[in-house]
Amino acid sequence: MGVKRTFFPVTLILFQSACFHAQAGLTVQVGAFSNQEDAADFKSRIEGQGFQPVIVRPEENAEKGLLYKTLVGNFETRAAAEAAKNALEASGTVGFIRNLNSRNVADIRAAITAATQTVSYFSDPENGQAVSSEESSATLNIKAMREQVLADESTSSEKIKAWRQHVSLLSDADPAKGGELVRLGYLAGANASIYRGGSDDYVSIQPLLAEVANGKISANDYDRLAARAQVAHYLHYYLHDYQRALSAYRQVLRDALDIKDYRAAANARMEIAAASFEFAKATGIDFGDLQAAVSALWNDAVQMQKQFLSDNSLTGKTVRQSTCRIGLMLSEILMAQRNWSDARSVAESVISIYQDQDELGGERAEAWCHLGRIGLELRDKPLCYRAVDNAIALGEKANKIWGDERRDPLWKAWALKNAASYYFDEPVEVRLQIKEQMMQRFKGNPGLKKYFGEDTE
Image (cartoon, rainbow, N blue to C red; front, side):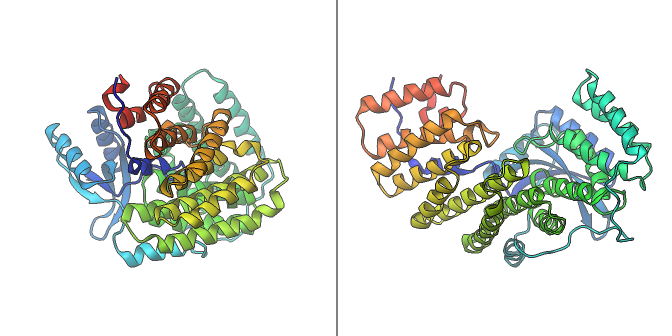
C-alpha cells in the first residue's frame, strides 16, 4: 500500500466554508420560456435525465419581457461547463454557456463596496402603515388549521400543498396571509440546500413571498422583514444573482435595524459578507475592495455584538454566531491575498473572543484550521501542529457547521495534518498512520480520493 503525496494547493478548496458554497460563474442555458410552468416542466425533464442542479431563473428581457430561463449547473471553469454542454447535447438538449453574473468591473465593485450602504430593493406598502402584529380571528383560525395539517403523517411536500390551499383562501388584505406565507417559505426552504438547489415547493412559493416583501400581500413589519430575507436568500443561494441579492440583503439590514430586530440584522450582515465574497470569486475581481467591505461589516457586527456577549437568548446566539462567521470570512479573504500576518491576527481574535462560547466550537475549530494553514504556509511547524491539534479536539466535540462533510472543520484539520506530514518531512510511518486514521475516521467521504487516489477503495 503506497502513500500518495498531497500537495498543499489543493487545500485551498478546503477553505470554502458554509457561508459561501462552491463558487461558480458559468452555467448552461437550455431554455427560455414566457410561462413559468413550461420552464418548470422542462426543468423536471432535464433532471429526469440525471443532470443536477437545474434551476429556473426569471430575467427581464428588453424585447420579450419577463422570461423564465432553465439553467443547468454552476461551474468554476469553462472546461467543466463545456463538458456539461456536450453531455446535454448527447442526450438531445441543445444549450449554450453563459455567465451567471455581471462581468462589468464597475458594476461588481459598486455592488461589493456598497455593502454597508442603504439601497432599496423592495417596495414599501403604498399606504405606509404598519399592520398590527396582534393575532386576528383569521390568524387564529389558520394557525389551528396549520397545526392540523402539520400533524398529518403525509410527506412534507403534501403538507405544504395542503397548507397552501388553506392560505390561498385568505384575502391579500388579511395580515394572517403574509405571516402564513412566510411560514410556508420556511417549511419549503427546509427541503432546499445551498449545495443541491431548491425543491419545487421552495421555488414555487417565491413569487408569493415577493408579494409579501413588496407590500402587495398584507403582513406585519416582522413578517414582511422575514419575507424579504427569504427572497434575498433565494436570489443568493438558488439563482446565484449576487448583484440583486446584495441589494436585497442591504435593505433587510436597514429594515431590521429600524425595527430593532437584531437577530435579522445579524443574519443579513453575515449574508452580505458571504454574497460579496462569492460575487468576487465568481467574477475574479481583485480582493482589495472585498477586504475593505467585509472589514467594515465585521467592525459593525462586533459593535452590535457587545450588548449580546452574555445574552443566551436566540437573538444573542445568532448575533455572536454571525459575527464570528464574518470574522472567519475576513480571515479567508486575507489568506487568499497571502496576507498571513493579518489573517493570523483575525483568526486569533475569533478564537479569543469566543473561547467561552461552547455553541461556537465548530467556528473556533474553523479558526484553528486557518491558523494551521498559515503555519503550513509560513513553515511554522509548532504553530501548524498546535492549530491542527486544537482544531481536531474541538471538531470532535462540535456539531457540523457547514452542511457539507468536505467543508467540515474536522475534515479540514485532518487534511492539514496529512499535508503537514509531508511539508515537515515526517517519517513514512507517521504518514501511513495519519492515512489509516483518516481512512477509518472519514470512511465514505469523497474527499479521501483527492488525497489517496486509488488507495481509498
